[in-house]
Each structure stands twice: as C-alpha cells, then as structure tokens.
Image (cartoon, rainbow, N blue to C red):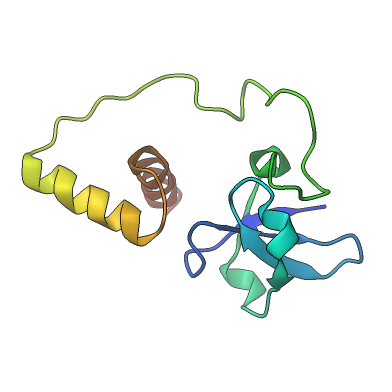
Length: 113
C-alpha cells in the first residue's frame, strides 16, 4: 500500500485503502476512521514512506519503530529575523503543520526542483 502527500490537502494523508482505492484522512491519531475518497489528480501527489502514517489507523502503516533513515536524525539551525519567523509560522499554521514539518517539506520540495 502506498502513502502520499499533497499541497492541496495539507495536514492530511492520501493512501491506498485495502480495496485499491485512494482515500484521504487527517494526519493525526485515529484519523483513518474519518477517511473520505480522494478525487484529486494523482499526478499532484508526492509518494512518501508508509511509516509516516503510523498511529493514524491506516492499515498500510508498518508497525514497530521508524527506520533510522525515515525520521529526522539531525537538527539544522537557521538564523531568521522576527518577521521571517512570523511569516514561516503563519504559513505552517495555514497548512496545519508544525514549523519544523513545514520547513522540512518546503526545503525538500525546493531541493527536488
């Protein structure tokens, strides 16, 4: 089973259901119980590790500890002005992400260009 993220649905996972359809659900504990069919464009999805959806109830999430390569292992410090940080926190909040997750997603997306 595959897991995806989408810019159009921040704070949600998109993944295969046991019958092969695509559904989306909240990226929070037991979010799978409130899943709905995904009707967006499949080409807009970015595939991610299925271990990221652990704890949501999605049957495709593998149990056990996260592999070392999948969880952030080292910190990166960035000096920012108060205005920059405020803007970043607003952007993260708009997408229902933590500042750290928003930074990581943004940096990964930009580096993949």
